[in-house]
Structures are given as structure tokens and as C-alpha cells.
Amino acid sequence: HELLISDEDRAAAKVNVQECMDNQNSVCHYETPLLLPSSIKDIYITMGHPAKPYVIEVSGIEPLILTLHSKDEMPARSNNNNSAPMSFEKSHNFVNSKIENNFNCGNLKRILRFSSKHGQEESSIGKETLVMKLTDGLGRSIMKDMNVILAARPDVDSIPRYVLTQNTAKVLVIPASGVQPLKLKYEQRQSDFTDDGQQLQLNVDIAKTTNTFKFSFQPTHVSGTSVYALRVTDANGATKMSFITVEVIPPPTYSFIEVDENHNEIILTEGHEKKIQGELEGFEPLTFSTFCENKPAKIQVTSTNSESQKKTKAAFTAVLPSFAKHRQNLVPCKVSLKDGNGAEQSSTFYLRVAPLPGFDFG
Picture 1 (tube, rainbow, N blue to C red):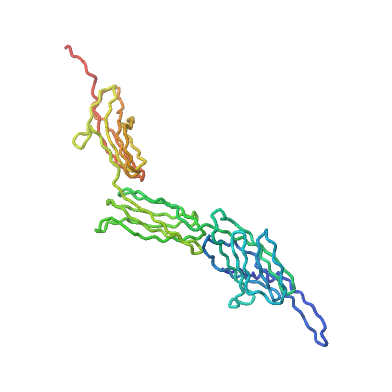
Picture 2: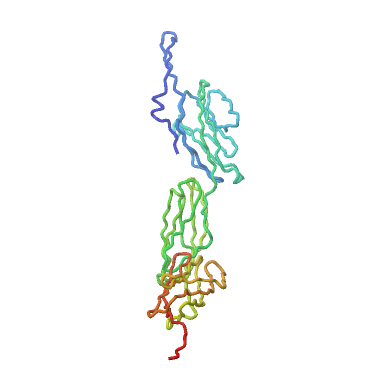
């Protein structure tokens, strides 16, 4: 990173010229302007990880002495001994700083290095304002503020296991945190899918503006489990490794005791409701409904067996709606079940609305 003095700042600086007589020679002393970059961006460092060095440009009469101190610290007095120190190290409230002369970068450039203090706690994360002071060989000085922000190490806010449903696309949005921009690498570490080419298809989209990673999965008709290693890296090079397990399960299912492939017709007496029993299974939350024409059936859950979120079974009673008069035609009842991933199953059975029983004395 380079913090340079802009051309506008140079043009705006005034150069004072003094003339004096030294014996018979006229000597002009050009007083070099004392300058620091006018715009200094916030500097982000990661806890427990060294930040990239910053090269800052200075201008003034040598020797130039550049120091840093916190707002609540007393600035060090300038030691005007006609030689600039080769390095200046200081411990601040949250961070450490070091200023170096590096003549490979030029006489008018200094290198700033920042690091978090050893053993720093998470509660110390935050912003610290440091005062940069430049003193020239004439004893003059200027100061500018710069913000050093101590950030936590990068992290991925994932859960250990994600459950997908066969043949149902799913986008997993996993938030991440750290000094931006963040980079993510992933690789499949383990898989129990079959070896006949049936693998879990995965695309990753990095949404930098929202600090999230989007994993787009397209499961096939094959069930299985894959383990992925995720490595997130922040702008300072700090990394964090985490693992997620992605499991693909079959689609949701339901059944009625009185309805099957060979018998999809139920007799209902006019003016009366009828209760039928059934079971359903799938990934929570499950949405189940039955409509006979435009009349919903009342679904009453009688028992549940939730061993885990991916394995939920429930027994239910469906109270079929009543019809005032018997029908010549069958009444269709449409059944729909949707699991937590959006996978759907549907079918249709029929009601035969029979008339009330009566006597024939003819």
C-alpha cells in the first residue's frame, strides 16, 4: 500500500525564498514545504495477523522524523540531533506500530508496519485513532490523524450439516466476516455418492457487497452425503478453515390408509363429514393440504416422530368436508405436500357423494 502526496498538495504548498549575503556570494535558501498525504484511508489489521506494510511519502528539510502516538498519549519530543532514527516502535492501546526508513523506496518515504498486540482479547476489537507527527530539521512539525481498525479473524457463519432434497435445486447463503475483500476456496473432502458419475453439482457465487457466499446446488435423483472444506481469507491474508456436510435425501412422501394405487375412491354420505387416516414423512417444515373441489380438509396431527430435522414422520387424520347433496359425478380431492427445501409431491383421489339412506314403501 502506498500513501502518496498528491500533485494538488504540492502545488498548493508555498515555498519561501530567503536571500542573504555570505561574503560576496548570494545564497538562496529554499525552504522545502513540510508535507504529509492529505488523504489517509483507514487501515485495517486482523487480530493475531500482521498487516501488509504501508509506504508513506513525506516532504521537508532533512532530517525528517516521523512518529505515531494515540490520541490519549503524550507525543514524543523531537530529538533534533541532525539524524533521523532508522526505526521507531511503539505500543498503543490496541495495536503496535513501527516506522522504518527504507532507502530502497527513496529518501522521502517511510514504511509503516502495524500489528495487533500479543494475547489481544476479542473485546479489544475496534478503532484506534493515531496521530502521525512529522518533524523536520528546523524543528517544525505537522500532524495528521489516521484510523487503525483492529478486526476479528475471518470466519464463515455456517452450520455443520445442510440437508437437500433429490431433484430440487437449493441455494445456501452463508454469511462471512472479516477484512474485505474476502476470498473463499472450497474442495470436496469426502463423498459417499456412487462412482457412476452421479455427483452433487455445485456452483459458488461470491456476493461481495453483502459479505456472503452463495452455494448453488443441483441435486440429482441420487441420495448421498458430501463433506466440503471451506477456507476463507481476508484482505490481510488471515485464514479460517471450516467444514460443512451436505446430505441429499429422498423427496417427501404421504399416504392414506383408505387410498392406494388400486383404490382411489372414497364414498361419502351427503351432509356428513368423514375421517381418514394417513402418514407423511419429509424434511421440515412440511406443508400438507387436501382440497375437495374448493373445500379444504381439516388436517389433525395425531402423533409425530422427529428423530432429526431430516427424518420427520407424522400420523394425521384428515376430516373430509361435507356436501349438502349427493352427486352424480365424482368429486376430485387434490393432495399436496411440500418439504422445507421446496420439493413437492401431489396426487388426486375422488369422493363419491352418496344420498342419505331411506325406506321405499312403494
